[in-house]
Image (cartoon, rainbow, N blue to C red; front, side):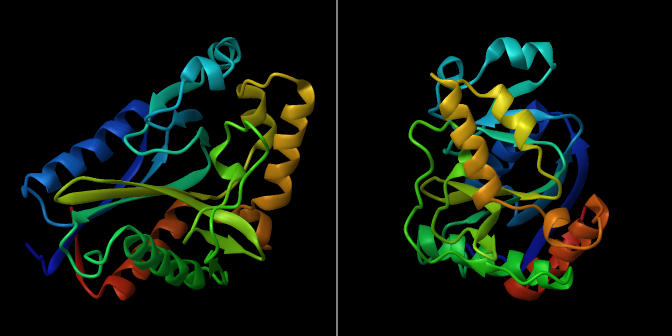
Length: 246
């Protein structure tokens, strides 16, 4: 089935459990043909950790530290490693796998969505690139997702800005990712579990050296709302479809 119109959901800020449940629900509805392709942008009402669907929580996270700081932990429907979500705009795209331009497979889907993100960034005055290389590994045993760089993710001056993950079923896919507005590497690495302090320091330095955030690469401070507006325009221009606000 191919749809000419997209749903657009500008969803504000929600707790971690609700955000991940909504993404999973959108995928299930698309799989059953109940909804047209959907773009959802949202934020986080408080700092939270999401972990990949196969990641072991107790092995990767300092649970005592998370409880002490009241950091919510929720499992993503997609893979990958731990992410700290707070000052960011998160996007989610669900569509049938038969939908153009996503009908050419996983990499083509990542590429099409990355192009939309790049156009959105251009609207903010930021010139980014799509990583065309194979996965760049992070430090050994690092539980941090942003410590690695995957194919078709967005970089600025060689540093990762947007991290994305995808889940595909026989009929539909969900891709969601984080566009970081302001990073907090100190908080993030304090929530992760390492065998030695040197591993924690190495991961922290890796994040500093290989990742960036919107307010780090610009001489102005972007708001959640203006980033969302720019990204919406990027998706509309790139996908060539009308997004219906709901």
